[in-house]
Length: 271
Length: 265
Image 1: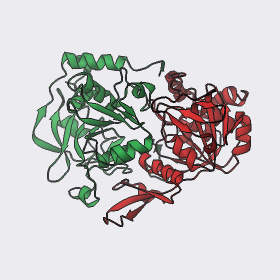
Image 2: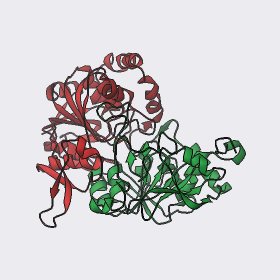
Image 3: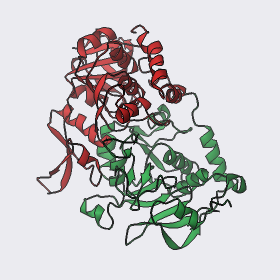
């Protein structure tokens, strides 16, 4: 049953050095505050997993939290490169970053298999691309019914999933709506989970297209209003596009990046 | 015309990027279902919806089906896309049920590099293990390129982008040439055309090699050749793309000016 805890407690208790940690959010509801708490608590040697690593992953990678990244698209959407992600891969700064890359379809289906309790997933993907040669986690399999060759990817079962949602009720049932990406699959595929929420409500009033994670499927819920900023939370606040653009400048040099992180993350009290 | 064979915006009254967007928008038919990449393809697809193709169905990989944004989104998951969509589905659903199953008419893609068989690279510049530039990676592109009934590609043409061989093959066009897609069991027909800032290339029906079939106004065959990193195949008599109409330009400029600068939901 989901426990209502502080973000600090949740990260202290549930995220350990060396863990595989999925922080999901497909351009919406991105768990920025939780990512910052992982940085403040100086976790190390994490394997980070996300379809679309963007600013928060750039920050985690630049602060030396991760040894490995499993991903399918790493960029600053609509703006350009992630400079810290690139510096880690191109120059090994601040620490070498091993990567395992997929297409969105491939990594999505790794989560689906993980959530389904299956060892692998089957999909039409990767044929004719350079990815199977480079990624050991992409194989092919013959359909036992038609003989057709299809791609196979292994389940991913992270130690912890961290996601952000709009609401939880007093019992810890979680409610999110709008673009919900692969968050449900990430939570169900992982051994433990932390959900930060905008609001604790007495009773959930289900929105059209709303996704509910029952309290018993979530480990911890933390009330963190604004926890997705500068990304957005539909119904609560808008995406701060200016910040996404300014990150391009802030993150370009190692020094400016460190200075920004110190002022805006390390010296900031946990919400 | 300038010495390079590319006309300047001052002479023509529009830029080569605007010509590219408008030429691409014209290729999307009303009522088609189009899987849209972010950036240039999204601009062109939204322009098409505002001009000749109001019934064009835009699909974004964030799960937005039938999005009708009033302003151009900065990311593929802007709130504007979700709020105006006919349906918002999860990411597993958009890739498995909608794309993989072959329901999408046109995949609309950009890339960092393209080769003569319209294969695309969005992964690395330089060797994979030690890239000189690490690009964002595959995203939805490999399966869009494989599974849509056909693919339209937009890319600015230069010796940096038109290369042979690619540094990495992220998404397949015609692979190694005739028969490649069939051997791989791909269901989609592959690239129909490549629209650049200089003209339009189409795959030769027999060799699958990209062939220059159209030139934008004021662009010479020589300029297109010079901007290609292999010996460019040129069709018998390249047509000249009709110049942008006033209405097309006005719609495009209004759309681009609405690009969210500050906070956008």
